[in-house]
Length: 198
Image 1 (cartoon, rainbow, N blue to C red):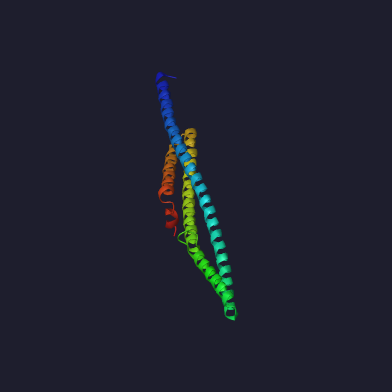
Image 2: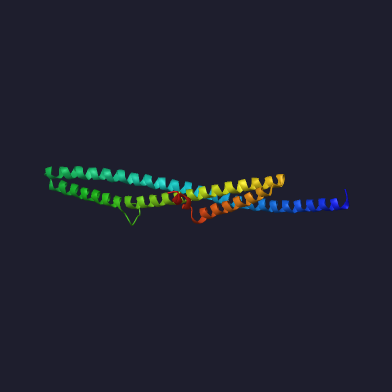
């Protein structure tokens, strides 16, 4: 090999080395964002599960209140129907007092703003928890899309190192941008893609 060919070969090796360093940095950045999106996704998934359990528990409490309310209403109505046929005034007064107490409890079971455990309040709490769960799930899905984009970007960047095809590096960078876009949606507008589909 002549000195000129040696110089060209050395320049080519140095250029390839510089190119590989850039790709290695690109892979490292994509891997960093992948770690963020995976962590955010796992956190969102855990929060969605927790809110789902809370919503389910609240609906169960709502159902229990409904059953108790219905039982007391039936009992009060049954005693009210028997009241006119009773002759003993003392017994009538005691039964009327019991009926009033049951009807008061039925009303309290319907709405109890003080304790926040009436049916009306429980329904509002359960629906709020379901909305929060749905938001966490929407975030989770955005982070999953971001993770997929980062993973594919890493594979394409790695393929550029092996093949030397520069277009793979550009495509990898583009996927990184898409991944960042999905992460941003997950953080600030988790329902954006769902709303756009309707």
